Length: 365
Image (cartoon, rainbow, N blue to C red; front, side):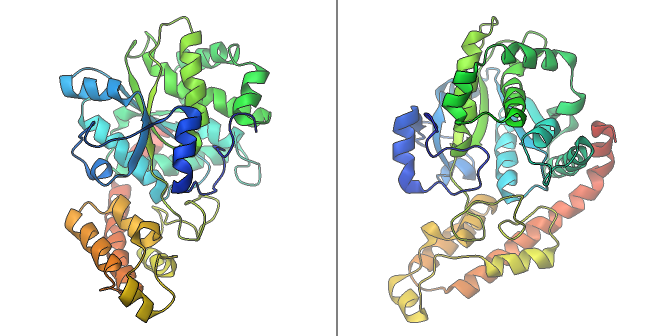
């Protein structure tokens, strides 16, 4: 697959921590060091941010109170799950640090990059977009933070045409490995998402930050290359890379395509409880072995739910330490985590009801 060995932006396969070092070296990604970029938020303090490209430019703006762009988008191809929530939580961190905010509801991307069996029409993509936007607003985003691809400003679409003339077939194949016309369209839209905030008609030239998973790095490499090919003297966009958040099954991430791999923000509380209790853990084969050797929290998907989504540091520390010491077995740990996740989802559902009308207004539906 060209230079994109092991990185497929559309795959739900797991990227193992043992592969990080190789990928960082191959693609020029830097390890993220918390002592170098001390940001007071649990997503940073818990080692969830693992790598970066040019984050020093963003951190310098944060420290000095300078302007920077905060850009994230979700492809509207299904309901949002906890993996998406982590991305929105990171968006909120940079918003709190005074960023210029651009959160994209990527409904056109969701339609063009997915097979018809998953997203069969733009009408369906917009319905997914409405659901995604409702979740984003319920999680604390402002309507001013959000734009929708299908009803955005003309200058954004003009940029997509400018970008299309600067991506050759050879470049696309070298990065992505194959030529799928639907995905080509989606990639051009994603490049516009990442870069358009720096145009004079929007914020103008300034650093930008986009949090992504490692599998999304091909998009970032292309965006950084295109930033220098456009006649606008743009900053190469910066990125931070989020640790792989395991799905509820073994060997994969949370995926909108598999309802049993993920906890969705729309799941009813009793469904959340059931999913947590059925999730794959890092437990040992027997109780005696677990008591003696301790559990393997570092590879436990239930522990990761707490690590990524429970703000209470003492709770997360207790889950980790009592697992590793063998003081607590997986059944009790699952119950504690299920209770926390049910609280989070129940609160979210109440917030959703408050913003449904505003989401529909923004989507034009």
